[in-house]
Length: 103
Image 1: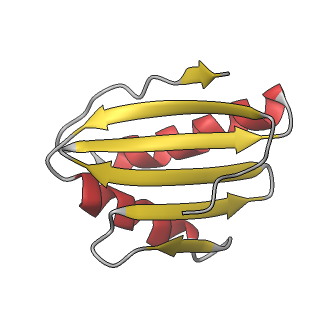
Image 2: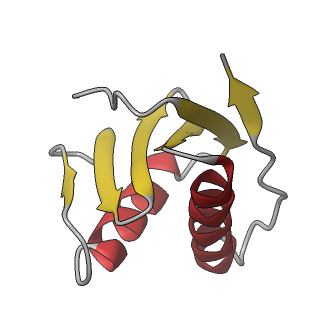
């Protein structure tokens, strides 16, 4: 998967046995409005928003989400959009989505 050259990044890890399913739901949902792609089996995905890029991986019961943007405001918006949608999709197994800034 291509890695974004955007300067600010953060990531979140969500433990779930349904990581590929949620990755697929997120990518397909956003594909109606912005460029999105995913691998067969929903093990990797990428969504290109106007404010930044979201890269996803599903592996060993963990959905890893990496957000990248040009500035703090865009990064915060991207984190919020992804978290809100994922929380909605995960209503059967709710859990908080915690973002950590990357260097």
